[in-house]
Image 1 (cartoon, helix red, strand yellow):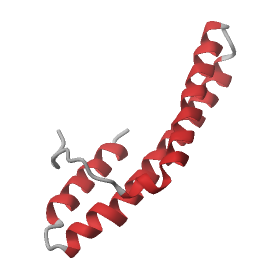
Image 2 (tube, one colour; image 1 turned 30 degrees about the vertical axis):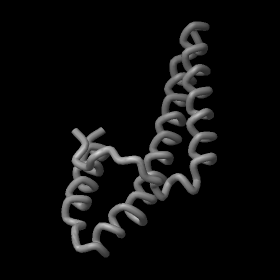
Image 3 (cartoon, helix red, strand yellow; image 1 turned 120 degrees about the vertical axis):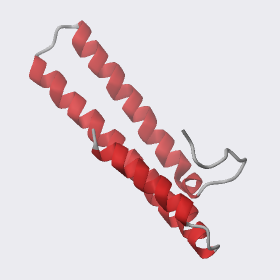
Image 4 (cartoon, one colour; image 1 turned 180 degrees about the vertical axis):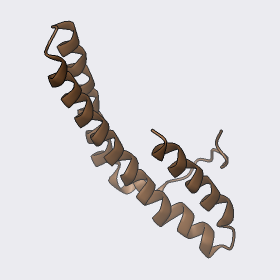
Length: 100
């Protein structure tokens, strides 16, 4: 559940939006490639290696967006004296990511 209300605003990651979208398109292509490998009965280890690469690429996108969140939303909230809620949300998100 989102702790922050959905508001029409420009987030810091928007500055790198084109790069993030390009990374997501690459992830989409990787996922389709893995699906094709399974359909073609490719070697198990080759599929696992591709899944590992896909996971690492997705993790990098997550880190880039989290970095921008910390530098933008969290830093702004701290400057405005109401960062506690943002910090709690950030810690909860990191906890979820680490439990994978």
